Amino acid sequence: MLLPRKEIKSISEYIPGKSIDEIKEKHKLTNVIKLASNENPLGASPIAAAAYKKCVEKLHLYPRGSAPELAKKLAVKHKVKQDNLIVGNGSDEILDLAARAYLNKGDCAAGADSTFSVYSSVTQIAGAKYKAFPLENFCYPLDNLLKASRAKVIFLCNPNNPTGTFYSNRVIFDFLKKLPKSCLVVLDMAYIEFTGEKEPPLHKWIKQFPNLLCTRTFSKLYGLASLRIGYGVASAEIINTLKKIKPPFNSNYPAQIAAAAALEDTRFIEKSLKMNNVERQKLTQSLQKLGFEVLPSGANFICVKFGKNAAEIVAALESKGVIVRHLRSFGMPEWVRVTVGTPRQNAVFTAYLAGML
Ligand SMILES: Cc1ncc(COP(=O)(O)O)c(C=O)c1O
Image (cartoon, rainbow, N blue to C red; front, side, top):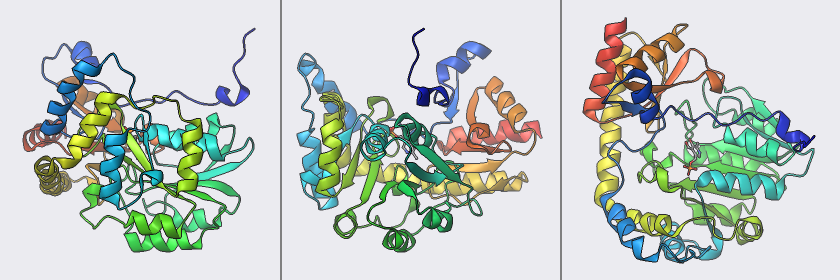
């Protein structure tokens, strides 16, 4: 019998949010609103989309694995050298590279229980154990992570998916200071732009913390989820290690070019952030008025307590053509994650929900 590695046995397949086509087909609907995967409800940056279209002439050529155009712009954005950057096939890939490069069989990685599930799966794939600490008052469990002295890698999601709760730069900085340099800290900043706070000075942090790897994505604010492009920022030592094991052509050329263009699209970035800020607050207030508990969010989604009937309400919303994410698989069966949509999408969602109460 052909057997896979025994570590793979206990790993479950990643369950993404339901797709628009899936719900259209299931309920025979023509219009479906997806508020389930934290994509940009305004679509892709138009400048990025135009740059992407031009790549058609180069589809027959291999991309350059180092993504030079993009890396050059990222180096300027973060005031770091290109040696401090690695581009990945989504930030997911950087998380996987980190686990494979730093975790030995039998090592321990630590993180939260209700957080992005990729941390535990990449850990297990690497043959290591994932120690999951419960959230503390819905926030990432920093105090307990400090006590996880055996952890070779710590995954820290800020803001946390799915709660949206986040820590200030000062708190994260103090946390990093307390950890031994032999522990790799993977700081996942997929939603950092939405907090409204000043971004942390990564160029200073990676100098002070040679054990820090920050991951970023173009899937959320920049609206490029389908292109699969993200990156990591770290000391040259960490980046060199990750580059040794990355697939040679991991990010594709259209994605590299579109991402480089998206960085320049300040109009789209500002519009997206402004809409998210206004709509997040309005959506929170509407749901609170309907009697729901909503966690304070620094992301492009909110975490709402639907209660014991969460699964039924989610299914009823789907039958009307609104997809939200039930958080059973995150260990929060009474809660739901709702991506902040456009004003119209949010109004449709709240109207259907109100009608079900
Ligand atoms: C916290 C977090 N990190 C990373 C990712 C993966 O992003 P990417 O599309 O860049 O792989 C996601 C996607 O939902 C996420 O929520």
